Length: 132
Image: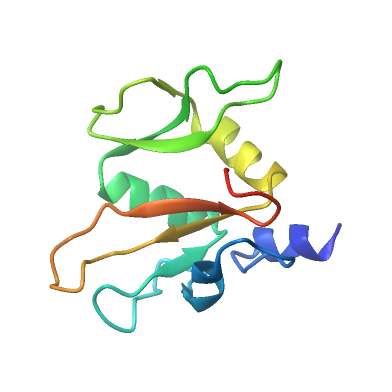
């Protein structure tokens, strides 16, 4: 098991060069108890539990972008909030999270905007490319 595999299983950051400074500036969270230091603060995790809980609380379903598959490789990962996403194909959590880990991704998100209102913002960051 590699250092990145161990980090991902524990909800911690994976290591390597990234094209996004936001990943390194975000507050890390590994558990459901992790709260942002202040409203508008970016959080980052690789924890399956945190990703699934946040999606559930936002009524989001795991999905991929239709047409972005490459042979048997899954397409670009997304979350579909309230079933409003166009061109998204819903997938089960096992498939979504296995792809998330295989691509060594990070889940970057905000709980609240800087004004304190609830936020649905999220971005999936990849250490090796700009698109997840």
